[in-house]
Length: 293
Image (cartoon, rainbow, N blue to C red):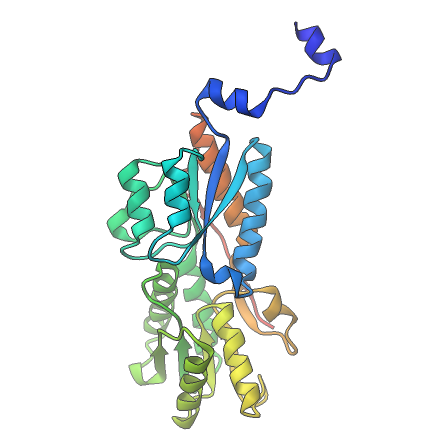
């Protein structure tokens, strides 16, 4: 029998293999609906790495879009038992998708840490050393000048933004900076709101901006350009999340790098190892790199 298999290059039928092992050999990758209309380099690189890693385990990747409040495609996929596990690309407070997976006891991994209320509920909770990296970078940025600094961010219900704010706060405290040396603006979820915030801060005499992520940073740069201001001649801009856009910007923008491909690859690998009953790391923590440009 083995000789026949080798001579004829026999490859087992995936459907038959899944039936025999009671597995579908499919995983669901849940991504935000905004991915369709925004250029999100971090998510794109994570997805690519997840697909490459899944291939090594003979798994297919099924993409399910989420509005952040619910995911009908994922619910239908789970109802029809089309996947063995799920990977979430964002983690947030009071997330109905996370609660759904926990209630149904579906194996799942996360790109990023879960809120404390969900501690230990994910099969794999992969993350970078977000707080540590943002603290280290913020210390450098805050130490470069005695001028006031504004931290600009999006929705604080996302755990990654909470971690970045914590890192910034710890850096400020470690330097014994008074509260009036820094200003924090969050909930900046549209280009118009970002532009208004930047304009308001400039009027307050703040010319140094630290952005929580690359998307916010890009919008800040666009807003400044529309006002006839440039980085770093007129203002200073930096980011707590790097991307190729910031690296290739003229001039380039200083940032802290959290490797998206490494994160996606690690989350997928550890999750699929767990399904195979092999040893795996339920809480891998990855390092960061600081780029001063």
